[in-house]
Amino acid sequence: MRWERLGPAWVLWLELDELPQEAEWLSEAERELAGRYGHPRRLRQFLAGRWAVRRLWREVAELEEPVEVIPDPQGRPLLYVSGEALMDWAVSIAHSGSRVLVALRQGGRLGVDVEGQRPRSGALVSRLLDAEEWELMQRWAPEEPILAAWVLKEAGFKALGSGLRAPLRNLRLVEEGGRLLLQGVGARLQAHLMRMDPAFWAAVAWD
Image 1: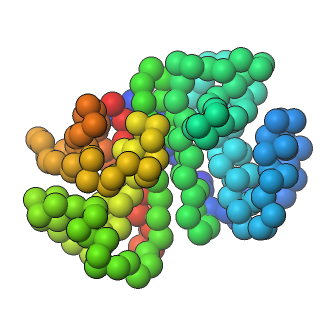
Image 2: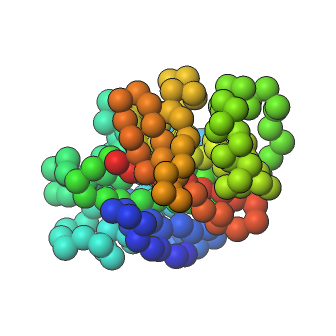
């Protein structure tokens, strides 16, 4: 488990085997959500995300009350303390395989994604990137340009609250002053690309 500050966000990542065996810390509402997961791995990913948010919250928040994560009607996660939604805080959770990534920030939008290496169709490139973006990703992540672009764009769409329901090219990757940006659909987001280990890529996006 490790956490760090990236721009306005605090980010924590961990592996599933770092999750405590007991789950008494779940709120009643979270227990109800957990009961919807029939597959053991999916349930463990759900629990790890909630537990990681609590650990990160204790590090960065000045409030002593415990926090819980409840989705809104569109499925976007919201932080709650003492039954009240913290609308000035943003939370994002992602998991892939045995890796879990969470992030918190106050006063803006936020999205994260993590993906493990696996074969990807070449047809995905035309849906995901234009020629300029492809060249950019070959410079930023020559080993896995498609995977890197995917996590960046998914983090961006999660920050906007739309997930991947919109066409992938609606957000374009550009470079400005040595930084990656995501532009489109009326938004301009900063993006940070990172490699959690040789098998997993992750991204954080914020406005």
